[in-house]
Image (tube, rainbow, N blue to C red; front, side):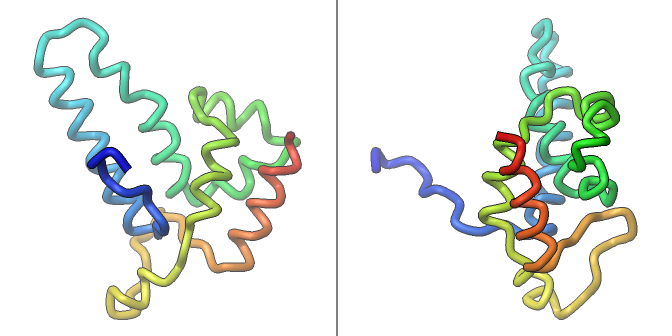
Length: 124
């Protein structure tokens, strides 16, 4: 390691939601700088974080919905979705007092994660 941050070992739906909020703030800041197209640098990250908390993601990942997925998330990389799913855990919800995720936010259990991971990896 070169003194940087260690790689992320696990992430849950709440971590992804917080990352979504961070990306919105990055884009807002970038837009406020006046640097042309700087905010566009966050488009791919926004696409993947938005997709990972979208309740429609399991449907959009099906092969027959590839066009709808590309329209909604044009920068989405299935390889990166797979990388996130490999680290996805539902454990954070119990740490948060067993609360439920807010309406409109995707949460997955272990079985759903494995199913989506197999689906994403089948595209290769």
